[in-house]
View 1 (tube, one colour):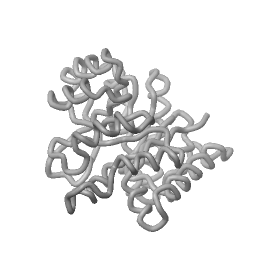
View 2: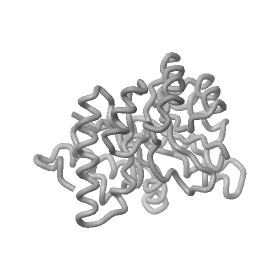
View 3: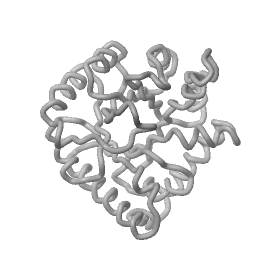
View 4: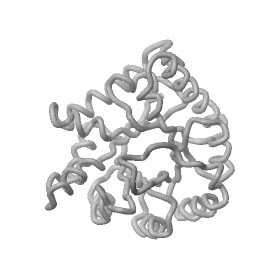
Length: 249
């Protein structure tokens, strides 16, 4: 089974916003990603608009044929935007103003009561909803109870650990993917993935989508965005095809 690749274009907007103006253009990056083999485009519209802005979301939805995955916090403002724009998918993430990037998974157990009607309203409008969560059994059961159709497993901790600690974290991700699939959830993964660490995650058969951004945007400064995406796509596909590669960190 092939694995989908979603390209997060947030940090094209970060570079643009550092100086103002319109360049580099996130929509252009999304079009290049499409031509390079991406399956979807991910963009996080933060409350403080530090990178992606409202007009970026409008243009991505109107001009890019690929499915748009809108990352957003659980707020009334973001609900209104999602219902207006109607992206293909929404991924609900935790968000704090002081963080440099999303630092961990959403606590679906703690916020079940608030998440359930929020998720229901989005999905009632035809938007697939995923929850960005830690690879923990209780979080997966909560996501199922809430009614989300998908989860995105946080891989950031796995990517930053070494040795036995990394192997232990990989085991958690693999077990979470198995459970999520058994519960009838689409299982995605992302955060911190690069050429060196993507293979083991891509080889987990229950994971059907990876969302990758920051590393590819940085690598594209040296090789070009299309080439960086081609290389990531190849590493993912090779890992998926390699016999016996799954379940190994």
